[in-house]
Image: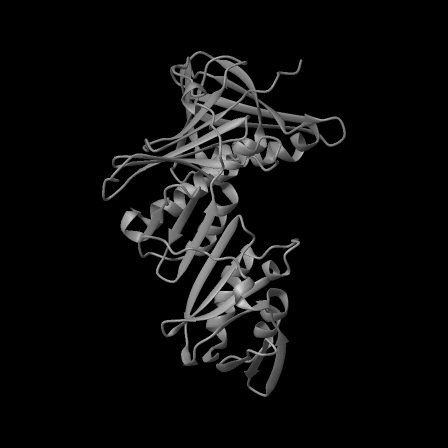
Length: 377
């Protein structure tokens, strides 16, 4: 293998695939990055057997070939080389990669590419075309609600449903639920339901960055995998097997009080409350009071800690219905308000023991359910 490429392109590609490199594995090759020529481009790939990321960069190919390079050594080296062209040549017999950039000459011990797990290519003709802008926002709207521990593995994933022209993402950790919907430009050939690890979607969102070109999602039958294909990047992830909770039953069908409040005003009140609530399991009390004829309604938020002190904030609100007091984990409220970009949000509540629902005012594609906490005396 003999190739020439730009240092900045190689550094960018390695940064993308490095997130799939196995941190601990009994297979040494999983700590390496596959470097292979591929039809006048250079293919970089890494996998930990659960997540695989492939990236293609432009290169001048003088001699075809492939090998796997220790990821940390390769990434650190490329990042220190000067910008501009760099040359790489592989001695197949010794599996040594010679890397030259500027005045630097380096030899890296590699492992034969035949030991690297095969990442099967996607059949894009069977895929579902997704809008990148919608997808990026959908991931942002739900991913934080997925569980981060493995006590219930199914909850560490995001439920993805495709029904005709409708795409739905849902995530829950048992204490809150986030649901986001979008419309597909082209109806899917058949309905699809899959549970994708939240970590894989987080990596996808990171790769999407400022991308605006289309993306294709493929679920190859019988493989238990999902493949996301962009122009120069492909992400393959194992699906999570099992039955996702019936989240429709978690969403309250009615409410007695609807409170419309400034998103930023509510967010600031929540952040201030959490300074004092974090030592008390993030518990904050919300007291919603309807307005009189000439005065607006109010949402009063209080939090206290035996060690830190107490906090109280009052925000004007439009309240339809009776007054109510309820306690929530204020960190969960902050998570949702951080991703809502409408001017106002609506909070739907019933009693101190019923879940609350947060919706962006003026949008029907997002809802967030948060379970109540026990009110202190």
